[in-house]
Image (cartoon, rainbow, N blue to C red; front, side):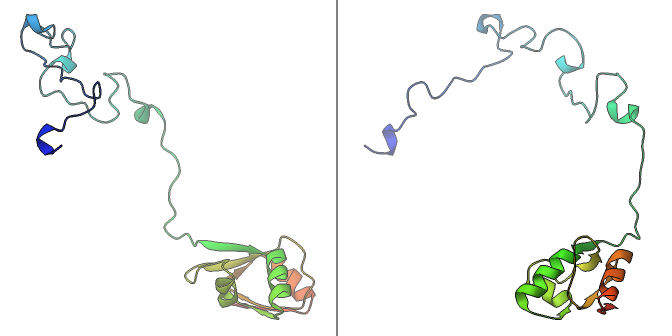
Length: 148
């Protein structure tokens, strides 16, 4: 066996449909394009979203909303998560570096502490932002907050 007598398996390939090569081929005449219309012409190309002259969907549906260029994206972390983290690591100061080491935030994230869950440790918490409830909960336990 050598490269000169290799061929594909029986039935795995098909002969190419030769279009526009006379009536005897069975694919002459309109060359499988049907009768008339833009799609039967050479060089036909429709633009994206074209619906044959019908009003396209992207023009029917109204525009709405916008992207706020001044938006600040925060990584939200709840008090119950901080409680578990402080208990497991036995720490009293939770800051962004501790959260990054624990895998809860990346070092470029801005962190916001939210007030969901129960906190019952006196902690020093340092983050970029705090919700009103989180701030109250930490300060009621004589903890301190620091906004970075």
